[in-house]
Image 1 (spheres, helix red, strand yellow):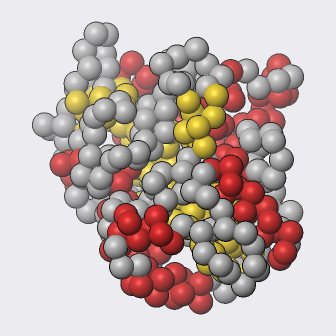
Image 2 (tube, rainbow, N blue to C red):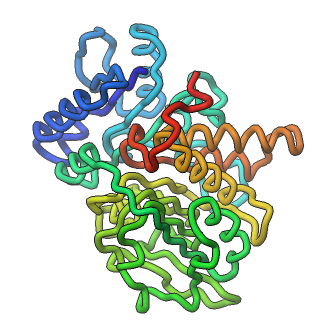
Amino acid sequence: MRMLILSGKKALQKQIGDIRPLEKSINEYIKSKNEFQALLCYYDMPGKYRLKRAKKQAEAIRDYVLQIERKIGEIDFLLLLGGDEVVPFFRLPNPCDDADEWVLSDSPYASRDENYTIPERVCARIPDGRSVSFMTRQLGKEKASYAKSFGLSAHVWLRASTEVYRAVGNPEDLKTSPPITSDEFKPGWLQHKDFLYFNVHGSRNSSSWYGQRGNEYPVAIQPANINEATGVVASEACYGAYIVDKTIDDAMSLTMLEQKEIIGFCGSTTIAYGPVQPPAGEADLLVKYFFEYVQQGLTLGESLRNAKLDFARKALRRHGFLDDDDQKTLLQFVLYGDPAIRGREGNKRSPNAD
């Protein structure tokens, strides 16, 4: 399998300063991935393939990836290095009538044609966190096994969350907010776990996630509650993966990834949707599929790609097309972290790998 590690050198230097420690970690990472033919390219620098440098624009960078494929063959894994200021998210038209002007998305980077909702390759991103040590830490992470999970749901979504959490844990252990609030939240709940699941409210302007019961919206968890957390994180919170102009201290996704044993974060960059009760749909269904594939032993990148493919197939079987909510769900969910790491030992081959 081929892996392309892609970034913009000048933009990356502006964000994190001296990039030599990162390049050293990338070289070590490439050597450690024996199952991949991996290479590092900067879209804004002359490279071995003599391609025209790309501007720091999403469409131009995507075209740069397609040009590399014409030179070396199809890329199976694409790992983007840096946040929106380095490798810009696509700003796609929002198919839903809600407060989001755009859907921030990495989906076009995962596609070779104009149907961005259907991924053709694995695509993940390691945000820069404005810190070279933050980035190098993501490349050196290893999975530890604890055979335990943690889940937190807004009280109003308990029934829907139960169906999702069942994929990785005992539904009776699922905690709800309220009564749980950030004041009573115990950091130990997130420690020595394989999976962390959150179905709560989020905001683009707040680092906290919120519960709900009736008209009560308590702060359920905030960055200060996270200490020595472990495992694979999947969050259905609106803006759970929103990192534009955010730092490690004011974005839950970045705070999670700052933890030594958090190996990946799957979440939404914009307003996400899900049913109040089963059957699972929208964000619930996508996260459920993601967890199931990670449980099978697929890499995190394969797990999200396959989850999106299964999600689209089910929608098409159900009513013959992808409705507005389906489209937005497929576009808005992203993966942060090493896409080649596995969250669970098991089957080492993706059923959709070919």
